[in-house]
Length: 194
Figure 1: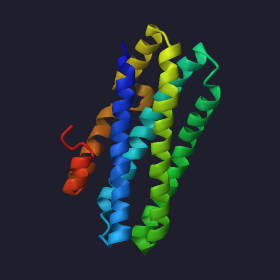
Figure 2 (figure 1 turned 90 degrees about the vertical axis):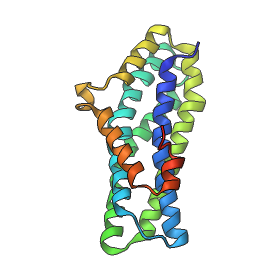
Figure 3 (figure 1 turned 120 degrees about the vertical axis):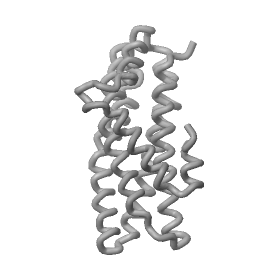
């Protein structure tokens, strides 16, 4: 039987991917079709990325999933090192994206923001694919039921002070704000009815 923690992680990936889809869609609508920038939505997307994947999801992957795999086997060390580097690189990349968004909003410098947003979304999708397609199958082979229970408990914990007060609720509020600000096709495609 597949560990429930895997589905929790995949559900979190789905939410992150939906936000990345929204970001990429907005960029393409502005760049390719001349749509007016929706700056409140763009800021909400970047706030979500900081509050959810960067501060909550990735640290739990590092501290629980990756650590448990390393404890059981060294076969994934190179892959885990790459995934952890992706996590470390995430914060500077999102800060750069926020700076470029501010320059776009203030001075109309759209092209640097468009390029950085496209690159960021693609990098996040590639990262999640590596976790799901390469790491998860290995984790299923090497982790014990006790390991999975610890991982499950960590990802289900909403009030862990290590990650802030109720980080999941804060992220959910931002996610709902993104969906509310998004035009109908984006909201529908990104799981508005979830």
